[in-house]
Length: 92
Image 1 (spheres, rainbow, N blue to C red):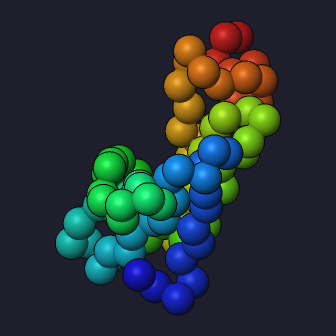
Image 2: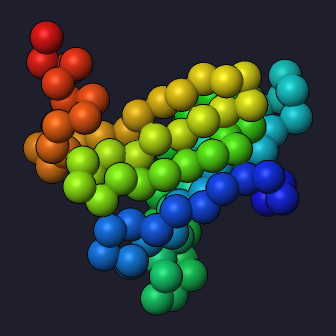
């Protein structure tokens, strides 16, 4: 993990998420999720061709915001569980 890579906890504090770094042109950065109880890797979500350096799990919106080294911002959400935020844009 890069010292400039952020981490975030799920609202229930059962999952910690972080972004992965990549060498330019070699791979795809991912959002990786780990159990705070067991440390087990529970998910890896492809995100960007550039390192994911910031990540926030917004507790009220239930949406995950990531920022990549190329200044791209992405929002991860579940249409069934997310409230407000990016959902207002998705429905229009």
